[in-house]
Structures are given as C-alpha cells and as structure tokens.
Image (cartoon, rainbow, N blue to C red; front, side, top):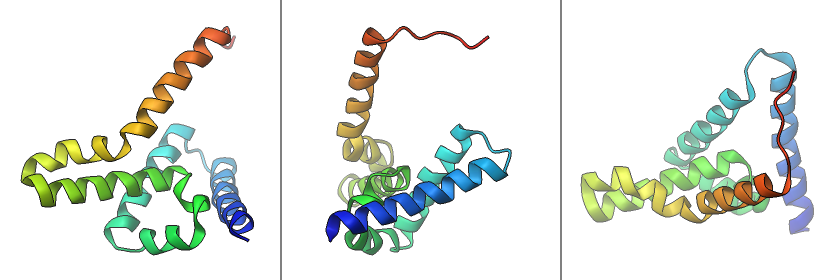
Length: 118
C-alpha cells in the first residue's frame, strides 16, 4: 500500500507540473525553482513534514522534498550554530543528494555524447 500511495502522490505532483509546463510560458528551470521554494515554504509552515510522512517517497523524491530538506537543515543548523547555520545547514542536510547528482551527471557525460540542438 505504501508503494501505491507514493506512486499516486508523486504522479499527481508530476501531473500538476506537466499541466503547468503545457499551459504557461514558464521555463523548466523556473518551475524547478518554484518547486524548491514551495517545499521550503511549506516546510517552514509545518505543512510539508506531516505530508511527507503520510505520502512517503511520493512527497520526498520530487524537488519540493528537496526544498523541505534544505529548510529543515537550515533550521537545525541555526538552532545549533546560530547565524552561521544559515550558510551551512542546507548544504549539510542535502550533501548526499547534491553529491550524487554531480557524480551521476559526470558519469552520464562520459557515456553519452552531448550535442547542441540546431
């Protein structure tokens, strides 16, 4: 049942974003920034954490979950380190995801031959 719930919630988030991409002139990069900021905003309001516990990977895997992780890391680091936590908390909390993205994108660049569109 957890897999089904995660699939349906994650699919619903992706469907909403696809509708947004098809019906607006927003570029994909801006939509990604909106998702990260929305996750951080909902995390700061205390909404995203209960939602992600209920939805599981369907809520934590999309970019809104990344934004929530950034916010949670910053919040914990501010409580621990004060003002300096603003700068290091988000990177500490999301370092595994950022590192994985860098490593896998480098491996993909070695395997595939990217070309510019004409």
